[in-house]
Amino acid sequence: MAKIVGSKCKLCRRAGEKLFIKGDRCASPKCAMVRKAYGPGVHGPIGSGKHSISEFGRQLAQKQKIKRIYGISERQLRKHLDEAKIQKGVVGDNLIARLEMRFDNVVYRMGMALSRTAARQLVSHSHFLVNGKILNIPSAWLKVGDIISVKPTKQQSSKFFKDLKIILKKGGKIPGWVSFDSEKLEGKIVAKPTRNEIGTVLDVQSVIEFYSR
Image (tube, rainbow, N blue to C red; front, side, top):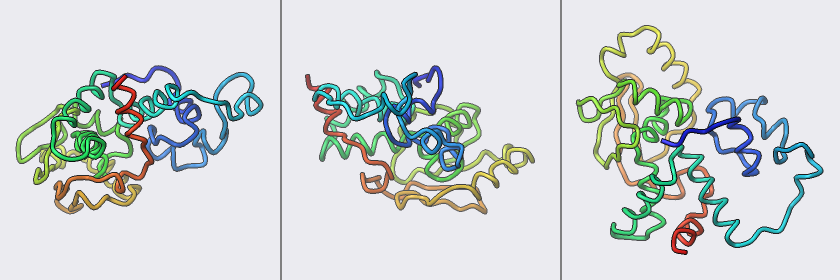
């Protein structure tokens, strides 16, 4: 896992768009991209005009964007790309699928956490079962057919259950590649995720070209 040092909001402002790193805050008026829709720095809006950027700079920016959205390290992204190249199909599509099917991201996509950071913490604290067995590795790569459920002892925890109810109420639309039963607190991966379902525009080809240098 990549540790973000400093303000997470500055990362969104630097990217020029919401990366949804801080969950529900990103959807509120408190979001930095709402209050200060310009790049960070002492010069404010004046110093945030459009500047020419090289091809290398554009590729680097897209790589950093993916790392920050999914909260992964350089090594982890490179590993996912190497695995995506081995798999059958389009490399870019395979890479997106691998990132989306990380355990922490699946929990987030099912609506059981407001952000990937929160999902990662819940997974690390053994709040979930995968196919009936405890799994506490956020980076674990899941597959179609896997069933994710809340650990029974955690369901009995009044605080966790109360927090989860709030999260599910605030949660947005669940993508079509997962299903979730809010009564059983159980979800399933029903299909391989596609680029059209991630809700964010990612220039994956630029990332592939960056690592091909």
